[in-house]
Image (cartoon, rainbow, N blue to C red):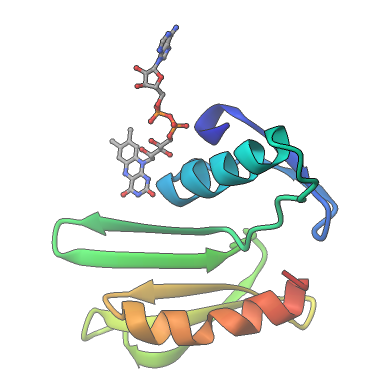
Length: 116
Ligand SMILES: Cc1cc2nc3c(=O)[nH]c(=O)nc-3n(C[C@H](O)[C@H](O)[C@H](O)COP(=O)(O)OP(=O)(O)OC[C@H]3O[C@@H](n4cnc5c(N)ncnc54)[C@H](O)[C@@H]3O)c2cc1C
C-alpha cells in the first residue's frame, strides 16, 4: 500500500502508482475493508497538496505533458490562480496555486470527465 504499491484503476483502465499522503490513507482503508470481506474497487480521483514555502499547491486529477493549461480564476502575476488542464476535449486536471478552495470547486469537472 502507499508509495510502493501500484494497482489497476478500473475506470481509467491504467496502472497507477501515487506518491502522496492522501493515497496512502485512502488506499489502506480500501485494502483493510477488502481484507475484512468487502469487495470494493479502489477508484480515487488522484489528489495531492503540498506547501512549498508560502505557496499552497492543490492538484486534482492528471497532468499529462501534452495537456493544455488554461487559467480560469485568479492571475499568474498575483501568484494566485486555478488552471484547468485539457486533453482530447476533456478536463484531466485542476491545479490550484494559492487558491485551494476555488480549485476544490472545480474538482467535479475532472471527476465527471473521467467518470471517477
Ligand atoms: C520530503 C518529502 C516531502 C513530501 N511532501 C508531501 C506533501 O507535501 N504532500 C503529500 O501528500 N505527500 C508528500 N510526500 C509524500 C508522502 O510522504 C508519502 O506519499 C507518504 O508518506 C507515503 O506513505 P507510505 O505509508 O506509503 O510510506 P512511508 O510514509 O514512507 O512509510 C513507510 C514506513 O515503513 C518503514 N520501513 C521501511 N522499510 C522497513 C522495514 N524493512 N521494516 C520495517 N519498517 C520499514 C519506514 O521507516 C516508514 O516508516 C513527501 C515525501 C517526502 C519524502
